Every structure is written in C-alpha cells, then in structure tokens.
Length: 360
View (cartoon, rainbow, N blue to C red):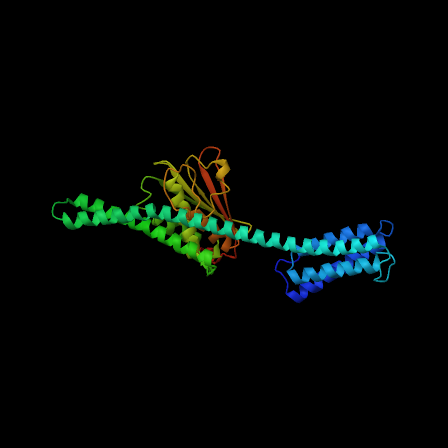
C-alpha cells in the first residue's frame, strides 16, 4: 500500500479504499476459509484493519474497523446471515473483537504520529548540525581570504613608497588569489541555495567542450602554478547541448578539489570524449586517493574527509553532483590503482557535428 499511495489520497477516497479492502479480504476468507472457522477470519480482518491504520487517517480507519466487525458478525459468526449471535461466548468475542479493533486502530495511529514527531525532531537536529558545520567551515574559509585581502591592501596603502616592484606584485597576486578563493566560496553558497530551493533551471545551448575546458583551466593560472594541468580531448568532438555556466562550475570544483588533494608538482589530467552520444569527462589527479569507506560520502553536502589536509566547506562536490544530475547525468569517483583519484562525469546530451563541418 505504501507503494500504491505515494501521496495520501483524500478522506473520501480513504473511506472507499479502506472499505473496499475489507470487503475483498472478507470475500477471500468466506470462500477459502470455510473449514478454518470464524476465529481465523477475525484475526485476518484485524490484521487488515491494522494495515489500513498504518497509512490512512483516523475516521477512515474507524469506518474500516466497524465494517469489519459487522461483516464478521453477519457472514461468519453462527447463525450466519443475521446479526443475531446465538452463544454468549460469541457475543463476548464479538465485543472483544470490536474493542480490540478500535484500540489497535488508535494505538497504530498514535505510533505513526509519534514516529512523525521523532523524524521531524531528528530532521531538525540534522539540519541544525549541518548548518553548524557550514558556519564553522565558513568562519575559517571566508575569514582566511578576507584577512589576506585586508593585510595585503593595508601593506600597499601604508608602505607604498617603501615597497619594491616585486613586493607590490606579490601583494597584488596575493589579493587576486584570495579574491578568487572568496568568490569561489560565495559561488558555492549561491549554487547550493539554488539546488536546495529547487529554483535551478537548465539553460541549454550548443557547447564546445574544448572551449569549456580551456575557459575553466584559464581561471587557475594563479592558484595552480605548482601543478601541471594536462588536457586530452578526443578529435572531432561534437557540440553538446548543455548549460555552459553549470558545467563550468562543475569542472571548476573538480579541478580545485584535485589541486587541494594532490601533492605539489604533480599532474592533473582533464580528458573528454563522446561515447554513445554521452559526454564523458574525466578529471584525474596523482594524490593519495580517497579512503574506500568515504568514496560514497564525498558528494554529500557539508561532508569533508576525516583528517583533511586542507579546509573547505564541503559544498564543492555536492554541487558537482547536483549540477550533473540536473543534466540527467551521473558522476562517479574511483581510486586509481597507480595512485590518485578519478572523477568521471557521464551526461546523455544532444550532439551536433556542425563544428566539424566548419573545419572541413
């Protein structure tokens, strides 16, 4: 019934469904349990009422309980086909059935209401925990670039004449890196807000994957100076119908994650291909990989690895998952046997080979 009624029907439909189920069960008992006695039918009907109570409101369940008692009396308790009960013990049994059915109904509904309150409380506690995690992360992650920007600008303003050209360039570079870091955190917060609120809308257009990847890589000139980013894109790759802005954010977060979790002077490889009209993008690093027991959790919002070497708000990979799934795609994480990790994006998308025609 839980699968049938994904959304609880109206009160009239609940009465109808409950009564129909009681009648059908009664018919089965009447034709198949003639030799089992009316006690067995009573137990089966009571179980049916209990099941109804798990999914429906109070009044429809009470209606089902009363109907089941009357049907049991009329069709099963001797003398049958009458509401008259011949034996005093059957009268007592009928009354007990009626009382037990009502008590069972009320208790089941109370238990269901209690479970809902517990789930609501747990949900509120989890939400509070998530927001505390976010605030704790932001207190560090936002303060760090802001402090760097303030410190560098103060040096430039107060020591402009004493600073060498090289010192000025270093401070300006520091401001640029901190600004990009701050902007990335703000973008992630805004993107997570769009995902959580359900306001995210895909605006697809024909995208050149070469352009997409190199636009993203160009944004890491300052922050990725200690890593080498290699690009491998299949020849004659078609245009794909995608949201360029969302996919840009996906690759930004994945490459930033690779830079943070791989040693200096190692290679980060970005590859792309078209496989069965699916866009497949790989982002690989030469780091230490992810703990096997955490690979399924890294896409959860606010989740950060145990004992991470770097900070982070735990939003980047959850946004990657959200944006990829918004394209009806999937993202996977696996450890590379030789060392490092590989993120795979697989998106089914419309393709166009118009770019190849232009090149001919």
